Length: 170
Image (cartoon, rainbow, N blue to C red; front, side, top):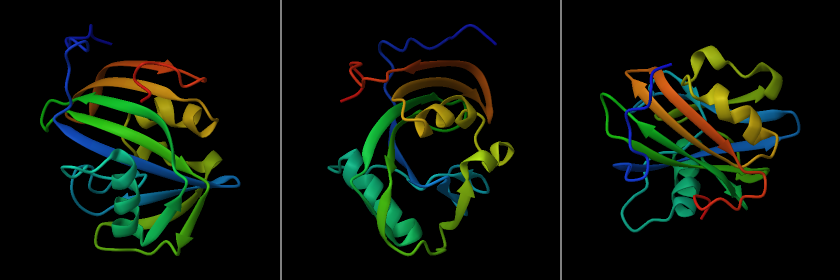
């Protein structure tokens, strides 16, 4: 793995975004993304934060738009900082919820997929997911910093913060 070329102390993500993972029992609600960044990949629902919108408001809106569900009592579990080579840098707020209203429904943006946590299709997801998603699903809060060249990780750092007291967990 290369040396990190990013000065994270001054890094600012150009694109604020969210991700949601709804967990029930031993399953997580994933999506097959049908358009936009990550088209064709499997991920959690989420997307770009609109001007004036909080990450919490965004993650609920995105779930409503992409899957026709409303997550109840989402909890922020972490942040992902992506320094990208070919798209704007992304600052992503990651949430988990255990309850929701509505029925997960396919839309022109996403196809819902209830997936056993033990059978998450890592090979169809962004490469970074394997480095933080298992820990998050086990209740650990985190900060993930990644440098991507295209769709390949060039550098990574994951900080786990079980108490959620890190300065980045606001």
